[in-house]
Image 1 (cartoon, rainbow, N blue to C red):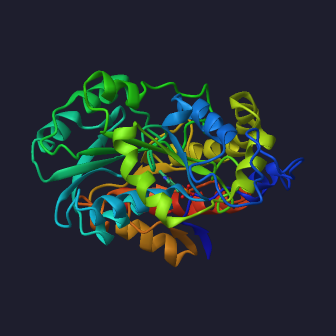
Image 2: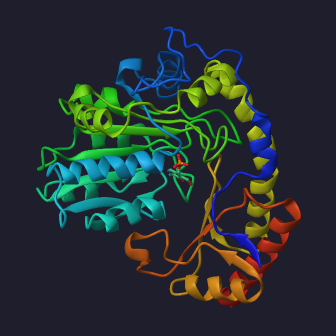
Length: 371
Ligand code: PLP
């Protein structure tokens, strides 16, 4: 069975970091990174994240090794503090990231599906639903969305910042997981959600997240959240109780290895060179098969649309032929794709030969259901 289910980097990508040795254990503020302290991150790590997200270093809280973990903790905090209540509602652009939806299910936040468009979530529907005081938040992957690879337009971002939300605790969960992950063209530059929200008097609305998982090493990365103090204070309070020392050794390793945004950009070009041929191959074969699919310029996925009612059938046909794709329906809240059309393709982890085999099987299955 070839496993094409998850968007993992290939071995050749994680090897790009070598073994990230440290040349000193002392941070620029004199902290010995081998000891306790520095709960919200080393100053040089905050600065690197601040460059990546185009925010001020004081708006950053550095986290551990997983942004999903940090997002889970945020939702947990807001629920535990009674700011959000189980049974309240969450806006979920879909197709979207299955693990965001799993967090909502875990905390019993009722998910409302928002259709995705090439410029982001359908904003007319979003604005309408935000008038409900039970709507407390919304997931967003603004750059190279999982799974379509769409990038939010500035018009979408400005409308999200400006729209009235009936619940004063309404949050935009801004998961910028792929800000520098282009393999075609330049890095997308989008409007800054923090600045846009502040300009509209909604300072506490956005919480940004980003991660080195697909820049350095998944599971041994560094992540962060960013926002204004009015949004972050409740999380700082929790972190002060939760830990007395994050992994600052890994933070310093990342700063010494990447140095600045130019260092990250140069490194991401090497990732792009590995990923580009895989995405080109997958897209060429889908096109030749007459499939309906998105052609991303970055990110980790391709979104494939089968004819209505056929995604589960295609998934099963692939499995029977020895190819495991992400479960049909997984890209929708509660695993339910109302028209049963969407399949998420993850080409990155496979070798070119494996990917060719996956695409042969997938394309043959799509041709069969297309008649
Ligand atoms: N957010 C999105 C949109 C993702 O696609 C992924 C991984 O596929 C993650 C977050 C996971 O990030 P991390 O490894 O930092 O937990």
